[in-house]
Image (cartoon, rainbow, N blue to C red; front, side):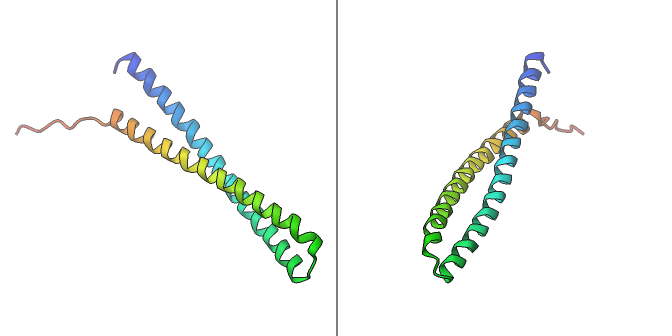
Length: 104
């Protein structure tokens, strides 16, 4: 393998690791945002049940903001997953050794 090709493979591996880390962090944030969304929804339902009108509006706004942020993280994670998949496919094409036919 030529030094230039080895260098490009090393860069591709580093890029893959970086994109996988971004994907993992985005997934972690989605999990945290889901938890916040559940707790805010619980508070909103409790305020609605107890007819606490002064609490309902800010909680409803918070729910919509958290949902929007979660959707943005979801789109980011989806984009990174596609990039990771493309990089893995490209690396597997570079690293696969062509089979040599057996002449027996």
